[in-house]
Image (cartoon, rainbow, N blue to C red):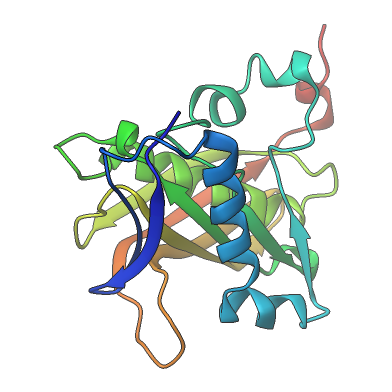
Length: 210
């Protein structure tokens, strides 16, 4: 059982606040609440209306055998971690990506603050998903990832990842983006982490088991 939660907005963050005295809400109920909130958020409603974006739940449809060895889909997802499968929209041709995640308390480095390595993983995974749509064999690997941490990312909050493919040359693709707060209409999001990366398409032979 998990503590009952109520979504509140404060200082550019949407937080699921909990009352430890009220242990009445199951993880499934919390998941449904978070998913309902995301689905009804104005930014999501706008993305749904844009035909150039395709929605994806990248880790929600993999088989159990594949999930067993998935770092994101198994190790980092669940109660207290990435609570619901990230909501992801990818622009046609891998031009850009928008992703909403909810990050729980078990992903912290310092108390209440999401670990920088976790944020690097989100950026790396999101950038790769963005540009892989451009590669002919849809598979690429990270060659370089540069990160600048601008502000603390507090746990039990929604964040938004935005990525853009900026250049393509042969088997190389450059991507830039950032993680920001999820805000209401009319508010300006706070940029929390900025990054840029270089990704290289795997040669077809390198993707096949021997």
